[in-house]
Length: 432
Ligand code: AMP
Image (cartoon, rainbow, N blue to C red; front, top):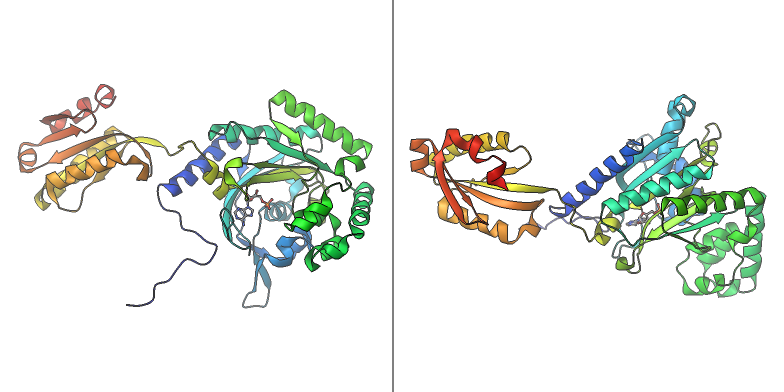
């Protein structure tokens, strides 16, 4: 036998019913975000490497050591996108941001790639669902995306999630904060690893990304972002909190949240789930008022978030698979195939939301019926939530007399009737 190929490290395949959970989450995103006027954008999976260096930031872990970068046949440096905000902004700037009505409201869903050490909830290829809103500088913009986010999470059955929010100083205040952080950690820099010493040197804010307990310890009692806000930033932060309170969004202030990407200004936030343990951040987001200009567009304020879809699905308790009835059509022998396919088509037209599967194994009525019972007993393995199972049994008698036998497996009732009566027999009364 030939050696079998395996999925690459850090990637995972999604089969039903798992894949259907992802699809249901994406369709909920489409309907919730759509109801706030957000339209879907799809950008390429790879971009020029320079895009990420300029947006996510040279000194971040992502750009420094996690990117899938390669040269194409013409020697261009390309990178599989590690996140989607940079691509969205690049696309908007390229198309002419100024021609879009304000605010620009977009959402996306798709795979992202980071060369990380895989563990539970951490992959090298993972999926994100995100939102970007451009053109609004006031806290009303931040509040809208957070309110919409919580509506989305509630639609998926999450009721106890809390957002942790922070405000990162900008401009000269950010410089001051960075200096204060560096001074705070300087006396103990010797206790840090090379990586963290580099962070401290190049971009002290990035020290918050460190997972080294020593760095975490040193950061306890470090200067807090909120003490460095200038007046306008403080007003922004306070107004946002008022808006969130009146929108019923649960949040706490958490000065340790700085997010691992350089483009954030002012508001940053995260939502974690206790169910996920160590890798507990389901999503992160914030304001990035300088990014559009940084990427060559007109100065444009913006705010958004990215949800780790894999983690979201893992943390979900509600069964969000679509619900549907199942008709399991069983021809008794190959002689009944053509007849069975005709009956199956007729049922599909009559009950459009339901699933109609034809047993093509040729194992006959008894085994076919046994399979239908199995489906009823173990519906969790199915791509959809099975509302009820009807076995449609088609033997030579049914074929010759143009009849149909339908067995309702839960009610244990069985009925044989002329095929032309299918419509009235499958009426709402029968399917209840
Ligand atoms: P970020 O783009 O780093 O702000 O991350 C946003 C969200 O994406 C995180 O809260 C995670 O839920 C998810 N995420 C980030 N990296 C990974 C990964 N390697 N595997 C799975 N999910 C991830």
